[in-house]
Image (cartoon, rainbow, N blue to C red; front, top):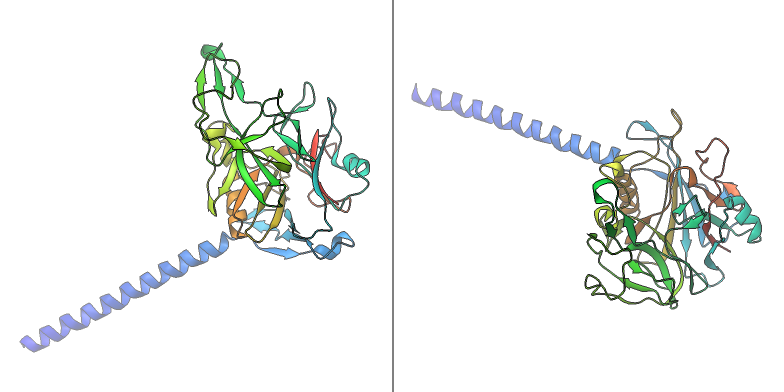
Amino acid sequence: MGDKKILEKYMKSKIALKSGLFIGLLFCLSAASFAQASILKWKEVTSQFGPLPNSIKVFESENTYQDSAFKGFYVEIDTKDKNLHLDTDTTLFRRLTPQQFFNKLEQPLVVVNSSFFEFKRNTNVNIVVKNGLPVSYNIHDIPGKGKDTLTYTHVLGAALGMDKKGSMDIAYTFTDSASKTIMYQQLPMNAFKDSNAKLLGTDPNLTNLSVWKLKWANGGGPVLMRSGRIHISNNEERKFAGKAINDYHPRTAMGYDMEGKLIIMAIQGRMKGIAAGATLNQMAAFFEQLDCYEAINLDGGGSSCLLVNGKETIKPSDPTGQRPVPAVFYVK
């Protein structure tokens, strides 16, 4: 009788163990399925954009992402191709559509919007470097409002640039319109507030700056990836208030991998049932999935526009079409 009870107890524990293993297996499969569903899939569509050198490839996303309507493109550029010319272009106190920049620049292979800007004077608010020289400068000082009137929050803006040896980097930059020298540091500076209307290069908070000798650079922010990992430095750069990094909008962003490939991504948005847009957290995940080493957000919303051989990839969200902007990045 005792042996029978032991046998029954053993069989019950074996059934329970099997049930536990089965439930655990289901959990693992569900987790794997969820992770797989979170990966955005891309297909190459280079042939749809006319003749391009082998060093430039175009990819389009699938139509849905996480059960929402989705549309996005990215261009992969092998910067080691010596026949390619990468640079920026900007205007002074006026804006042009990316298509107008395309015509002005004699039909480059790729044109994309870049820096954030203000509408009052139609000027960039981030650094833009062209042919090795800064052609616009960062706004480091954010005036306080309400109870914070007469105070200023000081920040370092991020930029993606290429140095004179052809190496790409994303760094936090300090610029002064009185100087052509571009200073940078690899780590973000914690934003701080005081009563000084201007952040000076002698400020004690700026202790890690070095000279950055650039061929070209696009300012924007926040940084999305740093050193191969997702790292969104929105709090330090003060780009979006509160939880706005989780809002869905059209997006433009750039990143690069360790093999010298530059990735330019544009996500369509603000179009119900067609394209929901993306959050900054999603943008960071997209670049991580593409094995980028670093990535940075650029101006988005109605400004997002990526042209390949003069042909639109995403459809701009403004009802009037392409929004005029004061700066673009291009490849010839």
